[in-house]
Image (tube, rainbow, N blue to C red):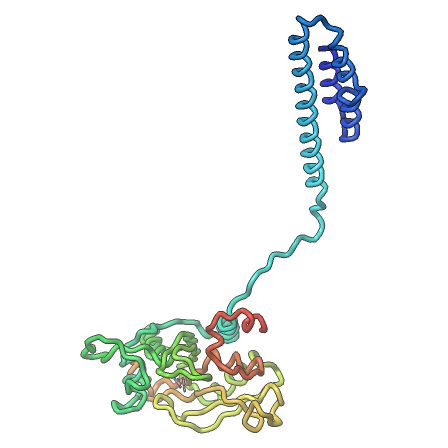
Length: 340
Ligand code: DAH
């Protein structure tokens, strides 16, 4: 018993593994105190041997289990000390984080640029009446865009006034909706939304994004349009880029224009990415008087300008890249998206 008590108290007081090894040797080793005592068992009278043997086993078990407990408690203390020794002021391990999709980034950037010059961002329905997308925008009944080879029609009985239900093929449908919302000018709208057309090839997808600007006020002229264009081109593409306008035709603007931007790769000199130094940005023009009338605005009192450009298009133009297949943008292919 005495051996047991002194062994247990020494084990408990031990401060490291080495000390424990020594204690183990001292008691349980070949010439350890316990081992020697056990050897003397032969000297004990035969009738008492069984009791003594049992007692000896208990002593041995107690020493061994105390030793085990002490070893694991020392190990735990060591790992706890290691944890506490982490330098919390040191730089951490940076978790990997993703980024917004390229199209979302472009939409945010475009919104911000126009927000600076007083345009309010709006969003109008993607499932739209023919009235807003075509009729009110001065499209004649037989215009090819109204054909079901060009536009997606929703199976629904047409409305007596607003006509068929379609997936909007352009953000210009937001022009009339904004005139109805504001009732009287000034209007400075930026409508960014998804558009749908029956097209699918390497440079067209059935769903794409456009941003549409509309300004209506007293004495708005083409110079305001040109100034806005230049401001956008320099803010989005860079100070060294220029814009130009060419005559064109749209149903809902008169005069109508196509806007070009100097190529970002050759800076206007001409290269294989562009047409003699210029890249086509999209359409613009002065709002047609019939469109103002459809929106309940008197064209004798107010004038306006509008523009509508593709988000995917400006993004590709900004990066100065030729994407082999536009549909890659919607593929969630991380290897592709991480390049930008
Ligand atoms: N809606 C036309 C399209 O999708 C683009 C457009 C052209 C919008 C001229 C306009 C504009 O606002 O004035 O092709």
